[in-house]
Length: 174
Image 1 (tube, rainbow, N blue to C red):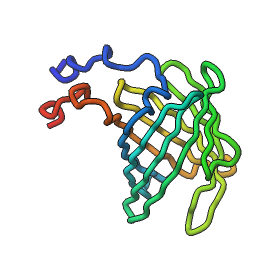
Image 2 (cartoon, rainbow, N blue to C red):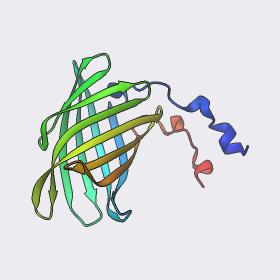
Image 3 (spheres, one colour):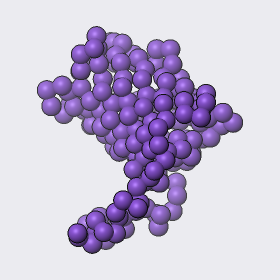
Image 4 (cartoon, helix red, strand yellow):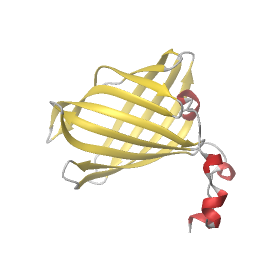
């Protein structure tokens, strides 16, 4: 086993996910949309400002796409019971429902996606996995009429904590 794998073995992986804690503060993310044929269609970065509320959290998301487009989205998330979250934002049709199991939060919702200058209603099957206290991985399948249009892959990195808590040092990342 190499030294990096040994240093960051299974002991550093999160066993549970507390979304209201992870999303409290500043988060940077980078992602890609890959169509059903495997072609990269869009890449993007996201800056997120999260704030805990008395019954959940708010997320202000600022997207910057590789084609120069910018987008802002605000999510209001409430915790409806120990393992269920409900989310609202402008382009969600109705509500997003998230189920929490250990380190995984699975969302299902319909979303008005802008495509070719018009909005189309698509279904998101979204899975977030907290990998470590500062890193979360996300995969979302995007479907229309049950057919896969493509997938979104996003890596979230919590940045509001000191860099000394980041699991990889600058030397390890080289």
